[in-house]
Image 1 (cartoon, rainbow, N blue to C red):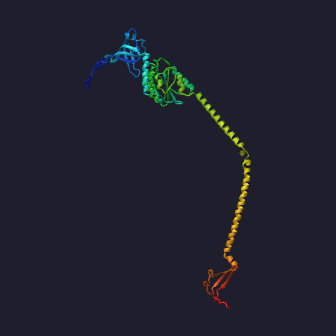
Image 2 (image 1 turned 60 degrees about the horizontal axis):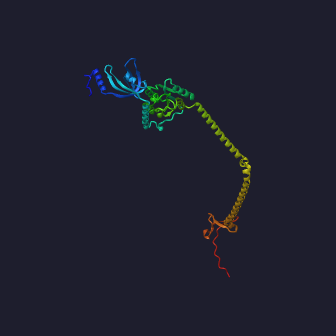
Image 3 (image 1 turned 90 degrees about the vertical axis):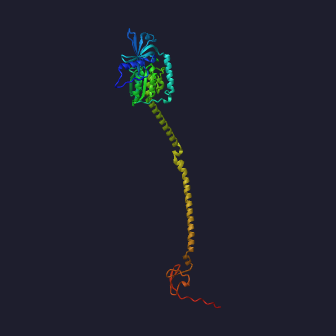
Length: 413
């Protein structure tokens, strides 16, 4: 039941401590799994103290164990060992601390560790964390390479030296962490997150040298695997040797067999690139030279043809006779058309002359006109004394209209 309290009626510390002790005491004995972070043995002391740390979360508990319990652990207990402890939680009122009183400690065997890793591997694979489709390609030439490794380790030297030998201008941002023991997971995950937030870091390398299965366990930890899966920056895993395959290798974007292999994968070799450029330049030179040679031979072949070598003989001269013949035919045709046109013009002029009044006058006829120019066609058109104009073929005559003539009588027999 909840304990009633208020600012006016607070509970004493001893009461709260006693209540906590009662609640803890009702928990009973439990089995606890963790990793030995610290082991304190005092010579001659009957009780030893062990700090048991959770391998994923940053949580630890103090464990007290008698000499008999510790001596019964085989192989002997050491820092970094994963264990299962059967203990009873105890709360010490005087110090207000919680601890576990161990009655049995069992190291987690290699076979059981491997079985747990296989179960975790199957779980993460079912979530799709190992699928090839989610893996990102590495940049050709990263601006900054993030390196997560042990302080002063051979793996760090291998990566730095080999990368600088391949590309002297490469820049690194090194995060030195614990790569073994109880703090390895937390420190590696924190380093990954710092490098992933850095906008200049284009690729992250997580590396350490070889070791036993127990030494490499932090790199199969679920928290580290999920941290790598959530990174936005491509991650290269270079853990141990070729035969070592922690789960980090499966979730990383690229798996390198060794730290030296990681250096080879993250930066190109300047000598190889120079050789590739030289080879490409040589191939381009040969290709262009071959093209020019082919075109030169083609031009020479075209120039050697008679039609191009002496075009006046092959083209002009054979066509000169054709042009002369065509010109002669054109002249004849034009002359013929002119002659026909002259004939037609002569005929037309003859017809016009035949129909012209002047031709009539030439035959002895005359045209009589009044003073106003009207042609006289009937005696009634004029009166006696009207002036007249008589047009002849070769001139005009002036006349005056006389009295009308009497019609002639019948002819006398």
